[in-house]
Picture (cartoon, helix red, strand yellow):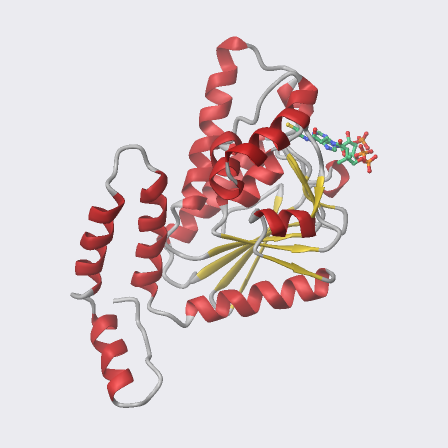
Length: 261
Ligand code: COA
């Protein structure tokens, strides 16, 4: 396995847990960390043994408190576009992953941290988690996909408000807005709830799960017709072994055993 300086990686029962591990900087995303996330997601795409991913932050205080401001402060007009495009590319890898990815948000999810959580398929947060896109305080805007994904998740009016005011909201408010799927009491409950949810999804037909990701993302893609993507994917499902197994298992009144084929 590659040697990661800024991530802790745990692998158990097909679940890969990625822990952003810069606790002294509240897990702020420097460029090295973003590259390590790219690298680990390439493994998630390639390795059959990995069936699902949990993404979380080290420690009790933060999921990720943003992109690393010491690096941001050095940006100029020339390299800032590349900086944003690079982060967008890595976060798109997460969003488009054909295996389920759940963000376990354990504290501050600010700026790039909120954007990272939003790139995951599902978000579960502890009740002390806090969300914000505070970039306007620094004279910038979200650059890792936040203007797009926040709008998709909470709608235009609230997204504009959150980004223009930089207001920090708690987990319950984030849940009410649709930014967070579930809120749990503490870290222990966060671990068990995300694991339970991931195991449930991992018990479903893997190809179908991946195609759902693809079809839902097609809704937001400017150049795809989502209905066509859905019909094509539906047709592709029907040539899979898992389709034969799923329907046969139902008719034979037994649990299905999917192989992802
Ligand atoms: N980039 C770089 N370093 C960061 C950081 C970030 N986004 N967020 C926190 N840190 C660092 C702090 O500089 C500090 O480092 P130091 O001990 O070497 O001085 C350390 O993490 C702890 O943060 P601190 O500010 O002392 O903790 P706090 O409990 O007083 O405040 C926050 C917590 C999250 C409210 C505060 O750190 C903060 O506002 N962070 C920036 C959030 C932000 O604007 N993110 C968007 C960036 S685009």
